[in-house]
Structures are given as structure tokens and as C-alpha cells.
Image (cartoon, rainbow, N blue to C red; front, side):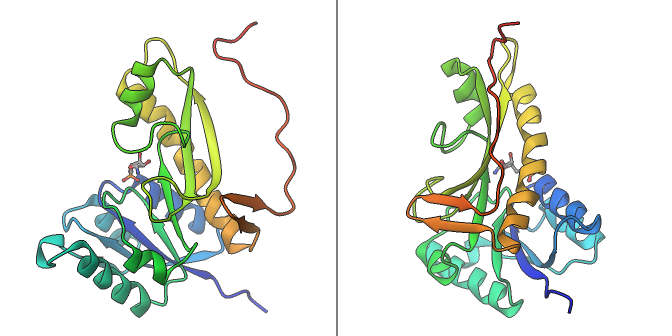
Length: 219
Ligand code: GRF
């Protein structure tokens, strides 16, 4: 009996490289999901073009046509429910979602943040990490709660910060890891291997990471 595929609703505001990584992961058979719809608050977002190129349904919702954030989110909920979405994936979605969306999809909204939360929440995170003198940065996939970048952490990847890094070079290094861990986080959810207890997300049947990393390396 073929497992019914988890139906994803992707929200994106920009280029959609994380969306592309999810599309690619599905296409090569690594991710047992289907993308039911891609929604953007920017009608010209390249993410919508990427979806169209793969025959994926798209919707553009312009925030100025709604009187407040809750009304905007109510429209998102309408679209997502119309497409029987089971997991909402924020992929470079540059709006803070409200309880209207969160209460409709409790612990069923994921986001990716290009830093090692709880360090460097919010925007301009690469600039913050470099200026702070952090030796490692990375990215975090987490469930979305009512805070900004505060939900329970599902998976993180670490990259070194080099002395000559710029925002661009560090962003590029982190983005590559985003494309690796986001599809994997969704796969873990689709396989029912994520258990949320309070702030903690326990991944079932998982081996432990061994070893440590130093930056600067001691060898
Ligand atoms: C990524 O860096 C992601 O971490 C942040 O916004 C960017 C989205 O990039 N939320 P893309 O639109 O997926 O290429």
C-alpha cells in the first residue's frame, strides 16, 4: 500500500532556493512529500516562477489588499486549507505569521533561519555574526510559535566563520547547508520521527553525532 504523501504548503517571498532544494529532493525520491501549493506575498517572487516551471500550483497574496496582519493570515489559511496542506513550510518568507496561522497549524509550521538560534535571531544575521566575532555560524530549522525565530529547534548545521568572511561569503556557505537540512527536517516530520516535548524536539531512532569541531583548528 503506497503511503499517502505529506502535502506541503510552501510560503516564500524571494528567490526560492530553499523551495528549489525541496523540489529537487522530492524529484530524486528522497522526500516522500508533494508540494500542494506555493504561496508568496510578492507576486514577482522568483520562487513562484520556480514552482510554475515544475507544474506546481501557485498563489500570490498581496498584503496591501488586507487591512491587517490577521486578515492576511486568514487568507493564507483559506488557500492552505483549500489545497489540503498538512505541513506549512516557510522558505524565505519575510513576514511574521500571526496566531491565525499558528493556531490553525499547531507544530505544523516550519521555518529556516540562517543562524544558530538562539544566537542572532531577526535580520542581518551574517553581519551580526561577523561583527560579534563568532567562530561558527550556521542554520536552524524550527517549528514556528508566536515569537520571532523562537520555536522548538528541529535540526541545525554548523559552518566555520573565517576571518576574511563578508556577509556574502558567509551567507553563501550557510545557504548551501540550508538546502541540505531543510529537506531532511521535512523528511523526519513526514516519517513521524519528530516528538515535541515543551521546547525540545526529540528525533526518534537517531544515532548520535560523534566528534567535535574547532575553529580555528588546532592541527
Ligand atoms: C535564506 O537565507 C533563509 O535562511 C532566509 O531567507 C533566505 C531565503 O532564501 N529565511 P531563498 O528564498 O530560499 O533562496
